[in-house]
Image (tube, rainbow, N blue to C red; front, side):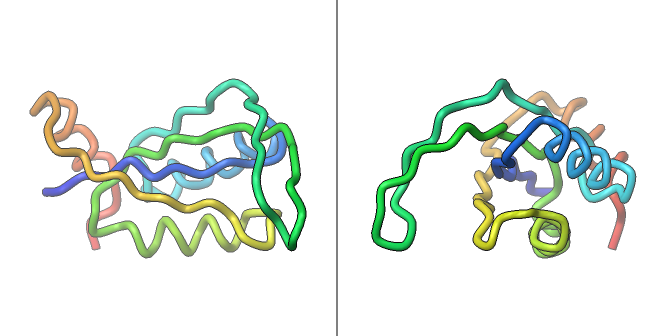
Length: 106
């Protein structure tokens, strides 16, 4: 089965941990890694903004992307959350099998 890394950022660690736990508990992700805070610089509504954000890397199956994206949108505090999927082109077969085993079969 094809696999994805889905990337998003949240405004703080508590919000990131809550979203990560929710995705794993609902079996939409086998694992969610919470990164250290990062400074983001971006255009928003005609201005250049700067904020501290906490990145998440979500390990899932490609067929679950729509459900993962929907869950992110429902739980995310931003008006326009980052939701970017990066295909996994290769990986350790036993790790990829673990992702398959730990995510919801739809």
